[in-house]
Each structure stands twice: as structure tokens, then as C-alpha cells.
Image (cartoon, rainbow, N blue to C red; front, top):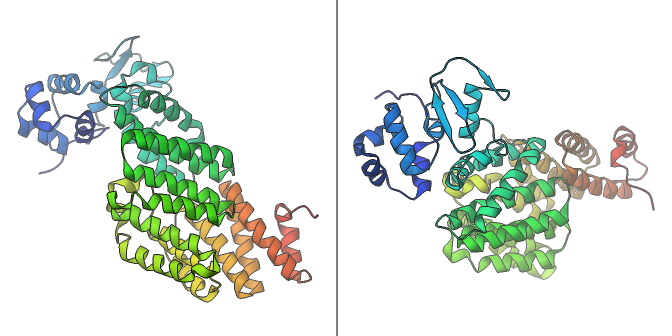
Length: 416
């Protein structure tokens, strides 16, 4: 059966978020279950009266349920948003009717600030649940500046809702935890470690409130990565061991991610080589083949790159650069998101340096520096600086090192 117009916000998703079943919505809205099911699948377009009945049951604006190809005016008042058939006055407050509909539905405009005062709490949660996965994707596609301007709205709104006792408190806490983890990633990107640590703590607190073990583990993993960035393996290992306490209650995606983190943490200690290799094996056996199918992937983005990258780091720490090279070489042959690509370039630079390959080290450093600057990643640029300083110490008289210093003055660290 051909599909009808696609809905701006998934009707099926809004029903799920509301806590109702499709049967309950159909009964309360006085609509046949088969008819509602067809609407959810996009097979047919609901009539105006039926949409209003569904919206009343779900507690959401009718506009959030409109198909994308519907064009009608919207008139906003202090206490409601209603449809109008008037075809005049195409602009209101600088927005066209089509733009306003998209804005209310959260697509493609992702900021809640312009409309939050018009929405009920349930509507804010429904729009947030739709938009937050988009924000995560945009982060990994390199749109950090745009997300940085939008994210505070979600942090304040969802945190406030999560702190209010209600039947949707846990849902709000779950979303607040996800948003704080995204804020952590942004803070790390700009090397604001104090903010990053605060966001991981907030994320864990909201995960506890939501009683969500997966979010608790994810929050701890974010905290462990801060210790990794500070080269604090003892603290990193301690946090991963704490995360292990939740592993029996979470999917394989989280178990495998904890195992690969433990492998890296143990690899920093000479006497822990066997433990590092043991956890590598556990990670390979546990991490799902298709992590993208896990519903929690949308706020983790842990995939094949994640496990391969940490495996390569484990081999580097174990002073096995040839094994690390094989891993990173394989990564480089796959398609990478821009945030993953710059991280891979940094790891590749470290690998070539440990292999003693001057030419390849300089080439990789040049690429990683250029990419880090283009992406605005303070973290990756700092990591590149660290490797460059090591290379300059090892090969102080080599022309490639001097040329790299002249070409990228931002890489030159202040001389003691």
C-alpha cells in the first residue's frame, strides 16, 4: 500500500511517549484502531476532526501531528495554538506559516526557546525526545557551534521538569541525562574539563532518578574519559570498575563498551597486560555486530570505530605499535564521521611516532592539526601538540620537524 504524506513528528512515537497504547488512544478518541494504525504507519492522512481528537487524548498540539505537506495558518495566543484557514498574512512575527508549523513540530528548527512558553510539559518532552537524537547526530557530524547555542534550552527545561514530581518525571530525567552527556561532549571538545566533569555528575544523578542502568553506565564512561584525557589511569580504572557493577542489567552495547574501556585502563600498568588482553577479548565477544540497532545508540554513538580505536590505544600502551598500526590502518579504510576522523588522525600520528617513522609522523601531524583546527576541536589540537613536542624532542634537528613548526606555528608550545 503506498504511503500517504509523512508526519512531521512520528505519531506512533508520541503515543509511546505519552504512556498510552494505540488501543487506548483509539478508544478515547472514538476512532477505529485499524484507522489509527494506518495513520501511525503513514498509509492514510487523518481528517481534521480526528486529528483534534487524537491531540486531545495525547495532550499535544494538533500541529505536531500534521503531515508535512499540509499548509495552513497558525495563530498563537497566550494560552493556545490553533489552526486557521485564512490564507492571508503569510508572515507572523517573522515566520511563515510553514516555518511556524515546522517550528512547533521541532523540525527542522531545533531550538525550544521561541515556543517553550506555548507548550505544555508533555509537549516539551515529546519534542525533546524527537530532537535530542538529531542533536547527537549533528554533534558527530561536526556542527558544534550550532549545538552550543541550542543546548542550554534543553538543559534548563528538562532539568526543571526532571526535578518536579509527576507521572513523567522519570522520562524527563532520562532525557535530561542524555542532554547532559551531550553537553559533556561539547565541553570536552573545547577542553573545558571542569564543565565536562559537572555534566557527567549531573547526567549520573538524573540517570539514578530515571532508574536507568544504561544511562548510569554511560555517565560513568564519560567520567572515565575525562581521567583518560588527564592521563590519570588509576582514576580511570576505578570509574570503569564502578561501571562494572551495572553490567548485568544492561544490553551488550554497554557491556562491550565497559570491557574495552577496562582494556585501555589496565594497559597503562605493566603488570596488568594479561588483564588488558582479557578485557580486549571480552569486548570482541560482547560488543554487538550492529550497534546501530540498539535503541540507546542514539545517545552513545558507540560503534565499530569506538572498539577499534580503543583496541589500538590498548596496543600502543602495551608498547605493541605494529599491532596498533594494523588496527588504525583498517580504520582509515572505512568511512568516518568528521569527529571520528580527527581522532583517528591523532591516534595514527602517535602510532607512527612509536614506530619511529619520521616522515609518516610529520605527515599525520600535519593532517591532524589541519583537521582539528578546521573542526574547532581544542582537545584534538592539544593532543596533536603533545605528540609534536615528543617528536621535536626525539628529532630536534630534522628538517621535517622544523618545516612543520614553521607551517603550523599554533603547534609550537611555549619553551621552558
